[in-house]
Length: 205
Ligand SMILES: [Fe+2]
Ligand SMILES: [Fe+2]
Image (cartoon, rainbow, N blue to C red; front, side, top):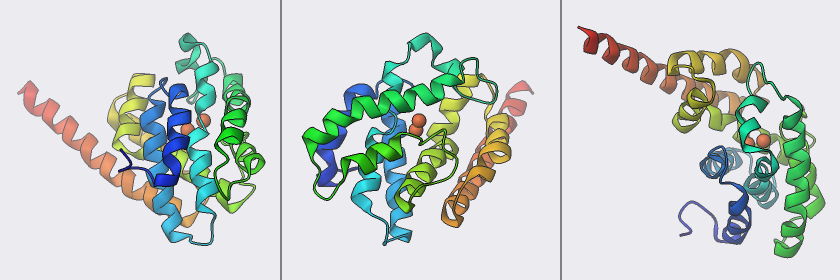
């Protein structure tokens, strides 16, 4: 059971999980958690426990948003842009009692809550820990699971989705490490999208 998670983080994941069964947030959270660990290996001075605790709880607030409004709350032209902020506020409210009860050693609850409160709408990082959470959260979009999920949200084909990520999300990466990882995932996404196109052409012949 502990394969993807550090033993310290299993209880935190179990507490967050009931709130992550919307918008593929369970997969998103676990992939972002692993991406955060990859980024942390490059930044050993950053506090790992704070980053990983914040990642596991960062999107629990989506559970409080009406299901029919979820798709229209994100993307280039959202119908309900205010829900981006609401999911952060709700996330803080949901996370607070769980984090207080978990009392993860070495983790300051208010520091984690400050990261959750602003992980999407605050464009600049308030600490190195916040910076890694923001990078790992965005990097998920470039992964094959992220591209597939976003294609489903907006009804866009993979090629367009990858191009949109390259044009609009890549420039928002805050660090050299985050940008390099995003570039690598864009390269993979482009190759897969090209293969997808080629197979369609071949099937039409
Ligand atoms: Fe979020
Ligand atoms: Fe997220």
